[in-house]
Amino acid sequence: MSAKTQRFTFPGSNGNELAARLDLPSGPPRAYALFAHCFTCTKDILAASRIADGLTGKGIGVLRFDFTGLGGSDGEFSNTNFSSNVDDLIAAADHMRENLAAPQILIGHSLGGAAVLMAARRMKEVRAVATIAAPADPAHVAHTFQSFVEEIETTGTADVLLGGRPFQIQKQFIEDIRSQNLEAAVAKLHKALLILHAPGDEIVGIENAAQLFQAAKHPKSFITLDGTDHLLSRSADAKYAAETIATWAGRYIDVVDSPKPKAIPGTVIVAETTAGKFTNTIVTGSGHVIVADEPESVGGDDTGATPYDLLLSSLGACKTMTMRMYAERKGYALEHAEVRLSHDKIYAKDCESCETKTGKIDQIKTEITLTGDLSDEERQKVFEIAERCPVHRTITSEIIIEAKLKS
Image: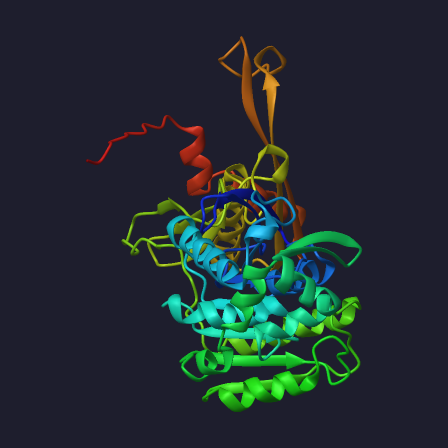
């Protein structure tokens, strides 16, 4: 499963609130992908979930949503069509651009694949488009309700059963899908294209992939999903598709980085990122980057060390380094030094040596392990020097912290 999932709504192309799900990797996303589901499906269809899970495992954040009138989204399905789905994709990309980062990857399954191909040229940041079992003509979807087409054309509407669920299809839907020229759009795509299709697909035949591939200009790639069905029902097939897309897209995307402050010698800079509620990027004076976060139990995403983890880490590292320097200067045969630290709050009245007598105080416990051919006296001296490391002295002495709000 992805390290973090956010659920929210955003306004679709006609103003209806669309239900969305954002799956994020454990660390800052390399890039964002926008996923379009199949005809009358939802964002939570098993294939979509498994593909999103595979992509987050490769460091790619994935936004998937229910088209107008489907799943958790508002609006009436009967009033939608292929063009409105494309417009909903544009609205989703706009939301990502304003609140996260614009999608660089578009992924579409079945009719969703046709939709991303039509939408891609309207998203300047998109660099790679991947389709799974996509038709070469949106009108292909009409075969799923072929026996009702005449009724729809005659009366203007019909109630049809698709995937065991009732849907009202209007004449405007048929007219809209028939008006699309997908192959012409693919020819002018000007994006890297990956077509994934199963030779045995009984819903959308493999000839559709051939048509799309023939229409596309380079860079274009084709991957055979041998042995899979149209809905990628087997987990292994969806995982393979996700890994293939992630590896292929990595050649074209620009890695998304949250703005990182420029390193300043002698200064540590800590800045929030867009990856999570509490996720922070730490840039040290020497240019090293560390991720800080809080655990999920307090609303964080657990993508990095907590502030107290970092505090203990600083103290522990200072102790081991000080012991190493001392042992080498003295010529002691210290092979390995290890410090285990823990932090807690204790009642001041339980501390006999503390000046504070009321309330609680902080307590840091350290347990030092030394290995090597050391005499008892040498072990004791190395142990004692750890108590005099610079960080230990700093946090146990009087500290003045000055704060200034920059304009």
